[in-house]
Length: 319
Image 1 (cartoon, helix red, strand yellow):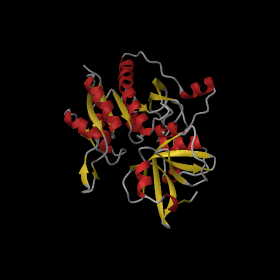
Image 2 (image 1 turned 90 degrees about the horizontal axis):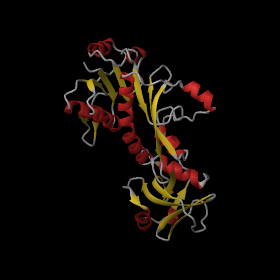
Image 3 (image 1 turned 120 degrees about the vertical axis):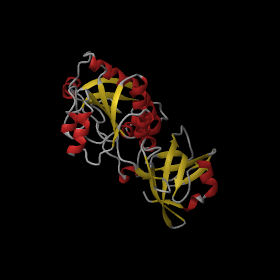
Image 4 (image 1 turned 45 degrees about the vertical axis):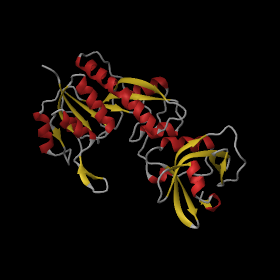
């Protein structure tokens, strides 16, 4: 009899893993996800990607509002899981993650113990890392601190943004997750305590807390490379931005793509110029090309389109 697995997840990153596990023949006896939410202009209720995947494969779906409820716990018990798998989901109560005999594992989008937290992909790019990866680990009380099972390293290209790294890690995660499950069922994996790893390799783990609006603000005083990395790390979502005024009205200028220049015009801080077919912004310690931008009330546009449509000398940067 095949081992029984319950899968927890919500977004496409998780749905990709679920589809892979189904394709590999794992016995997914139930899926836990979030209730349908209103989306789009019509605000119609819409299922998340994980629910759509489960329904397409006739897998029972649980959509609890309260993960601590006795009703939900009884539904899980009735599914008789040997193992639970969590990918991009909420924090689970202890009685939930302790339910299966083999425990509950998580797929995390970083090389633990680095970048524990809600936004590992964003912070990895913001910090200018050249490598990232995915980790599988056993859940425990403190978030993202459980014993590591397996890891897979992924290279980050110089111009990768958070969306690019998301896709790379999504692709790398699926076979790693399958390998982890097989290894657990065959008792071929020796878990590694994260604290032992920290002590042995003298690591000071970098953190990845949730990104808030204030974290997305850009400043003209930032070093050029740091500003470029912040733009990459917050693109395509939520988007890094400058507070500006245009024609004496307050506005926001989001920057979705930038380019480091080997050479450029000499510009004062906060000055914009269309130079050599590029929209270039002067910073306190250099210049940077803005390749994809969006000003309040308008659609995203290229730097060229922005330069053609707006009076660059009427844009005032607040910092």
